[in-house]
Amino acid sequence: MDPEEIRVGELLRQHKATLATAESCTGGLIGHLVTNVSGSSDYYPGGVIAYANRVKCEMLSVRTETLDRAGAVSQEVAIEMARGVRRLLDTDYGLSVTGIAGPTGGTPNKPVGLTFIGLVGPGIERCERHVWTHDRLGNKQATARRALQMLIERLNERT
Image (cartoon, rainbow, N blue to C red):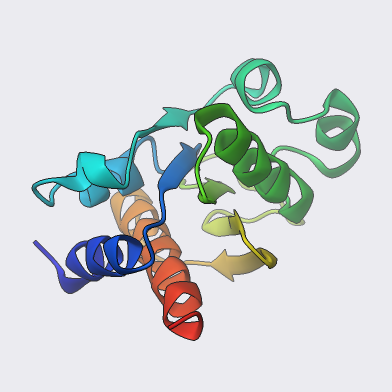
């Protein structure tokens, strides 16, 4: 177990806060990491793996217009996913990821490794853009780790 998942749990407990995840390119890896910690059900009720656009729309309330205009791999979709999972699971924080893990699927405008990480919660709506240069598994792991670090940074700001 890595320090991020332990620290996320400690901080969420300290703040009496809850987290839900909406994952596309990581396929549930963030949820896996969070639930590596015994007792994580105290602050993590669950998440949604929204790999298909239909799931993003139907479960997370991502607008079709947003997908048509910006594409599934975009800042706008990451924020709408985070808002949607937060609302769906009634949590304090929603953490989302959407991206192109590779090795296929990239374009000149949206290369392999492009990832958007959204964080929505009390007083915050933030999205980070990254372009990782690892293989598929490495891109997924880098995205999941950075997502947890973003949440840790936010929770530390609130201490």
